[in-house]
Image (cartoon, rainbow, N blue to C red; front, side):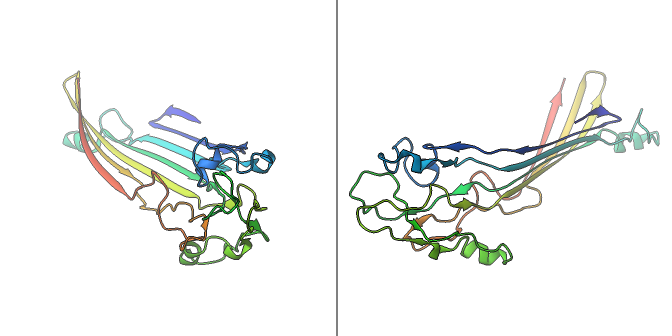
Length: 236
């Protein structure tokens, strides 16, 4: 954390965390919120990392008042002070690993009221990351690692089976202050959200038996394409 000095301040933090629960992620993994355990007679089977378990997260922000204009390091004088002075930059970035995913059966054949029946897990479903982006989106995990548990039984797969794609979000702002007399100021703002236009993908389809099983078909919620907006603030 660097506090404001010479027109510059910045802050960076890294978080390592692990969240474990035995219920909440039923909704996040495809079940219904508050609908109970998959197997009410084996509640321990639902203990796993939470659906909102983000293992690694890095956030950084920078604010920089450009050192030009009247009273600044670079002061060319005259009209140039008005043109070059009053500019500032803002930047914030978040990089994080993906949330966990958990596979469930498309059809409940346990003859029970379970909110999310899981398949049998035959092996580790993780696939090598040394693949193209298109290949990852088409098949995020090894679909053949999951099998039909059969009639009237709950599968051996845990509530979570791996992690989805991470995300990168970077926002940039450019501000210009125009001073009018002592107590009046007009501020021009240009703000760019996700200025790199980086695509952050959501979790794959998790229902075994669905035609899109294992495929990523959409973006992560709340992660939009690049947005640029302009504004004027009059301060008095």
